[in-house]
Length: 152
Figure 1 (cartoon, rainbow, N blue to C red):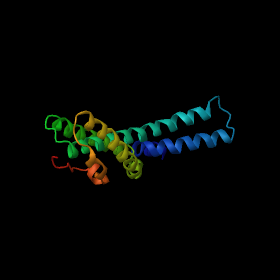
Figure 2 (figure 1 turned 180 degrees about the vertical axis):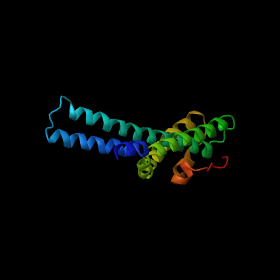
Figure 3 (figure 1 turned 135 degrees about the vertical axis):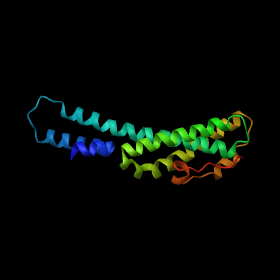
Figure 4 (figure 1 turned 90 degrees about the vertical axis):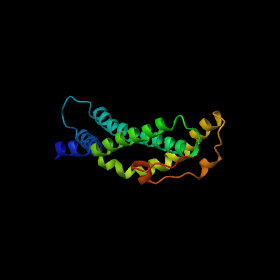
């Protein structure tokens, strides 16, 4: 079962394997292994995937906000390309670890206010208005689907 889970949902595999290692260590199985640190390292692999997903969602949200709030023409193609590229990478992460899909809403709730601050500062640095950012909000479908905002 473990090998199948490893192939189907890496994140869930890391959670289960780290629990199993800790349980084995608690039973004092006599093996010359550093059980706790091995479990911690496996668990950290799952945390790294979760962190990567959150970072990619933040990047998507920032670029959606720029597309929606900035009147600038020149960078629009790059912003769109970034959104499309990051969506593809998120899709790959969610294929490798489908159990992470349940964390997308939480990550989005975390990303939106942070993206507002970053994009607001960038717009201000370029002499563009940033007041409209406070009203921008996105659904999971908008962030991970095909939706792109209309030009500002």
